[in-house]
Length: 166
Image 1 (cartoon, rainbow, N blue to C red):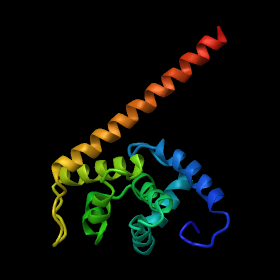
Image 2 (image 1 turned 180 degrees about the vertical axis):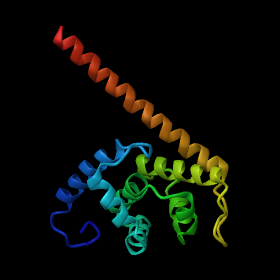
Image 3 (image 1 turned 180 degrees about the horizontal axis):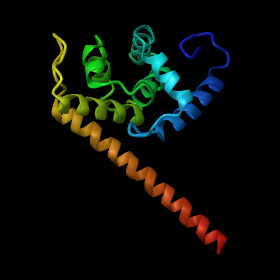
Image 4 (image 1 turned 60 degrees about the vertical axis):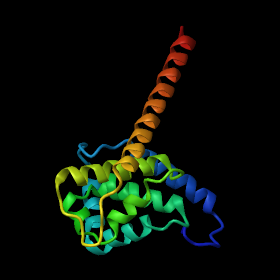
């Protein structure tokens, strides 16, 4: 619905997407999924659903929907490097998320996914080339800086709560 020009409740939908995004962001790839999420993960990993998520992640016109799709793909579906390698256009979609001005969360997810992919040694699809290491490095550094800033903010909130409680 976020991709519909005339959708009248886009602000509410974006707020809902932001809430679910926060929940997905807190998940790590090493975290075991509950049985309800395992079923959803399998469904989303089915070829038609996976390709739909990829197409949605590649839409630049609606960043909220695109970034949410990327988050679902990489945090919930948790594709193997083989799946990433075999999905036409996914390397390019991830690469496009590395530029300045892209949502920092999406930028970090894309950068970490590409780094994992390159480390795996999986071959690139024909016609694809690796991302400039400097661009990848800047995206990873920006993601790390954002994570540190979030951690510092959390520590300050906890400290303020402790001071208030005393």
